[in-house]
Amino acid sequence: MAFRPPTARAPSVLLRDAKPLKAIFGHAQRLEHLQRLLESQLQPAAREHCRVASWREGHLLLIVTDGHWATRLRYQQKRLQRQLMAFDQFAGLTRIQFKVQPPTTLPEVAVHAHDLSANAAETIQATADGITNPGLRAALERLAAHAKPKP
Image 1 (tube, rainbow, N blue to C red):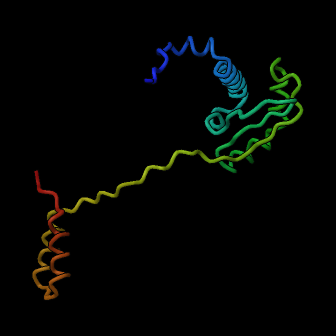
Image 2: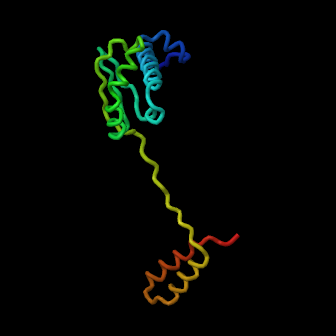
């Protein structure tokens, strides 16, 4: 008895036919529409720091990247609420809640590539020549070898 996987179907067919996927896709589209409406009322600098998390029973939950932006948006909360209530989608808005959630992407590790000049390499090598400790001498010679050759 061999397992035969079902034939592959196009993503558009899956989204149209599979009820769970259709519901998830519809919810994502609704949140994206609410996000666009929110961004239209936010200052340009705040747009990248604020995302719509949920809209339910008159409560709008916004995810903010850090405490600084959460504080700035809380000061503007009444104005933002009035402006959003002008849209039909936010007609029953009674409360805006801000939650701080830092971005989940890990910061890139900075690689410190220090260039060693030929003059510095010569000085380090000269120092290494005068050292009697073999370990220290080898370390200084390795360091001097990192010098970039002149073009």
